[in-house]
Image (cartoon, rainbow, N blue to C red; front, side):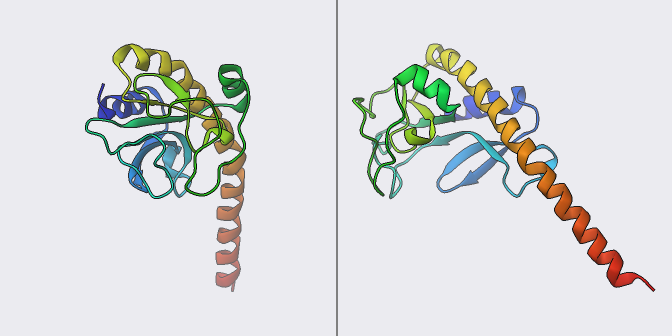
Length: 168
């Protein structure tokens, strides 16, 4: 599979999502009507190492990593425990080869937050990732709903402020 295939799948099957390019990766965010500046992460695709994320050796030819933000309970069910947060530039202390391809793994940096990943997944592995992607989507919608009322209140307050300025 190619990164674009996965991103296209998400945009076609997860209503209210948008594609955002940032920090050297492409991400799918839940952000209906662009209500938030960026939205809430569903997944990202990273195609090269970054200063603080070199654990997967993504600078190899034709290697990329899809990263999915699942619930912590799902992560624990898959891998047994949440690791401690690694030092800046480090990787989590877990017994995995984070350079292994076509395998669902803990994220080498963000496993402590419940993120999972797969390097250059095949079509079969992508099928196994789909339920995790849909969980991440539902989780992002929950997070979004907690943020959205604040946005609506901020907009309402700005309108009131404007009306106060224009009262005669």
